[in-house]
Image 1 (cartoon, helix red, strand yellow):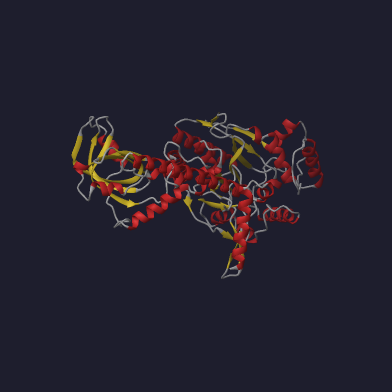
Image 2 (cartoon, rainbow, N blue to C red; image 1 turned 135 degrees about the vertical axis):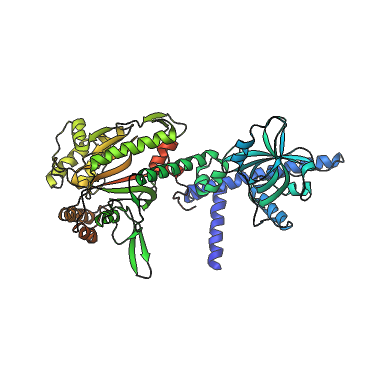
Length: 574
């Protein structure tokens, strides 16, 4: 109790210092805490102003002998709104009914009865609908209007006492507020102004909203609130729904494309003994029963290739990967990817498939190969990205050589080559924190000379072997691999290669990765002996492909922040 008291006292002191404008106190407070205190102070000030205004109105009404005006629930302090609502609901019966039969969707209703003329009614069909009240507008004691929303559609509910059959008209509607979910039973018609409406015989509260919602016209703009309370974001901002419908279309298009070509969808483990399949820092979890630390998967690649060894020639998986890396506009610790593996294909086949798949997807979803995108957000300058095939293909090392006007060695695993790359990166004043190995230095050079200048879909091909431990060596170019990455507007979308199926060479690549890890590269892969054993049983010539669903959704929904396309993105604790 003493500890709690001291902690409470400490918080009070901090708050007092901050509210008093004490500079030293403000420095100790986090930015989020200062923001929260400022909002509290502003809310308190607004509540006091409203209370004062109401007192003046009540006094004026009393002096003139009139009844004080009824309190507008929308003008209440949000905290008082919740308290008052809870108290009111305690005096009601059947506040949360178990069932309300719905016999038609709003979309169907709108489509089916849009032919009605102004002022006409269709009483032969009784509609039973439900949705959330977005707007409530009273017109006297015997008429009011609701704007009802459900599954992305809206319809007007025109309530008139003359048609009301169940319960007292005033009591029923007096218990319904904006934000509530209600059920409506009635007939269809159009108002005199031509708006399609439901004229209810019965209205029932199905689930009350205990919080005051933002008004539709002002929307919900606070990003922090939008991402933490996605349900509120979906409720208020209708364009958010469209983003996640686009995401669903992308996943379904990939799935149908692969299914039509004989691929089998599978599921592989998300917890692994070794974090293999990609160059990334893993999350660590613990299995209590086995008393064993496990790694959340960074990619499903190795398991999928084992299935090809087992005779499943075409397999794919769409699922979550986990990488313990930074959070920024294009990275989230958990993300969705699709990987497929195709026996008897190589990276050239996969480039052709990638062009066909993604260009057809863009045309199907957007209606055009050309997409308008705002890389700096909706208020920034727009660019046009053209997905029409064929797409440009550039060899990574050769393009760096052409643009840097240098000749790079191909023995990248040797120190002499690493030194040449280090000197070039230093001369260009590019930042590359330790360890400055060949792989990381080449990545910096590719970003500087190639990736950062790409707008339209472009394949970067033939990565060095030191950057691609799971890719097969190039059949005609020393030190390189048969690999490609697809970039769009400076961002990687796909990664694919002819798979390395020589167990001896694969073990050598794993050991090189382990050495890089020992030197401080926390993204290096470990040695997976089980996978090498699987290769010893024979992996046919195979092409493997991976695509990030989140980034693809960003481009097709015109979002520059990955949090906009993930329903519940990773957030710092409040």
